[in-house]
Image (tube, rainbow, N blue to C red; front, side, top):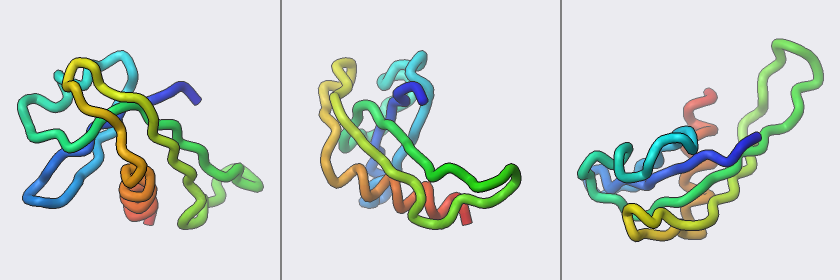
Length: 92
């Protein structure tokens, strides 16, 4: 899978991840909101044993890296767990 970009927004004191395609700019997606961190993210899921089967919770591996030069912020190690937790919540 190609690298995706992400920003971690401060939404009422809680970090909220926004993941988007690499063709977009970090600054455009941030749209003036407070950004805690940003960079690139790779997502890896388990291979489903057959078509139509579900991916189990905690089956998504997340790897953040790099930085956003346009926002002048870096990715943070704790972003891995925040993004993984949110993706697993979305998948329920």
